[in-house]
Amino acid sequence: MLKTFPIGGIHPPENKITAEKAIGYLAIPESVTIPISQHIGAPSIPAVNKGDSVKTGQVIATCKGFVSTNIHSSVSGKINRIDQVTDSTGYKQTAIIIDVEGDEWVETIDRSRDIVTEIKLSSEEITMRCLECGIVGLGGATFPSHVKLTVPEGKKCNVLIINGVECEPYLTSDHRLMMEKGKEILTGISILMKALKVDKAMIGIENNKPDAVNHLTGLAKAFKGITVHALKVKYPQGAEKQLIKALINREVPSGRLPLDVGAVVHNVGTAYAVYEAVQKNKPLFERVVTITGKSLTNPGNYFVRIGTPVSKLIEAAGGMPEDTGKIVNGGPMMGKALNSTEVPVVKGTSGIILFPRNESERTEINPCIRCAKCISACALNLEPFLLMVLSEKGMFERAESERITDCMECGSCSYTCPAGRPLLDYIRLGKSTVIKMARERIVK
Image 1: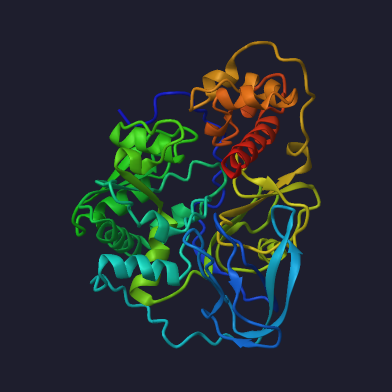
Image 2 (image 1 turned 180 degrees about the vertical axis):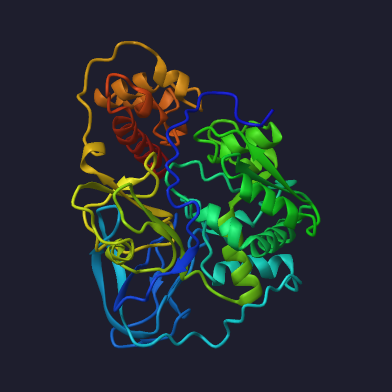
């Protein structure tokens, strides 16, 4: 029997339209817009000025504090300006706009196609290289990787878990990366194991990607301590707590981290980025992005330079279909709608989905019928109907006691609700309010 997590979960239509589409390279645009905050933690500090010339891979913003990281230019050219721009969240933030001139890379980057498997850096040097190269978690959270590799005194990691699940419908960037860059990913995993000083790594992949399971299983025979595990197809299998439970049967308590049960989790995309940083000295200035949708004429997977407008991806996919009703950044379950196609691709952009109009409209909202489907679907054993009511009525202290901050915003509750209740919308509102309240308590 395939492993999985025991509580809740759903199985939405997979719609992996681009699963067989090999990764291409999107053309470099005329200009890029690179936000200085593309990660969890403090925004980076600009290290360039208007009029400066930069090369591809050059640091243009430096980390501010421990939970932060460097930002690099994804192109060569001249700094047009440093300005406030609207990003994919809909909010304005500081960004560095660069006019492209050629594609001249920093000389220290190894651009050869050779796969380098010998790991020469020490554990401490690997962690520092991840900081220098701006590596963050590419599964969506964008947590700075050097922080995850720094195990606090008194804690111990004994297993590295690699997330190759990609349980969100439509997205295939991780799937293609596993198929096309398997040896690099496994070397990246070995690097992460050395940094964490562990001798065991487990790769979890949903069983709807048997080609990736078989491919990595074959390659892993040449890598000590790495095993590959097929998992039951069930959303949200790729969430950290659910993946840990499925693979090693340990339960991360409320408000705690995977390291509290001896595990650290990284995404396969992150493992590839770590390989490039450590073995090729290549900063994180491009990533694989899926551009997909049922009405697109040429959906696909592309390596995209950070800062490229989303509109360029849509052009590559054949242009905007006439029936487009909504554009979503990320997967259909956890992604967020875009209000402009001129927002830039950032480190956390895994996919762009164009939904036709008839799939974009919200259903009529009706009163709760007490069916409890939202509770059955919740993988964290929460009561979504109650959390929505508490948020709607402003009862945030009660919402906090009902563990609203445990919600990972997977959207399973809203997906299953037959009454069309906007459960996740209100839970997000309540969760952000409770987190703000908690921060204010700490300040006092």
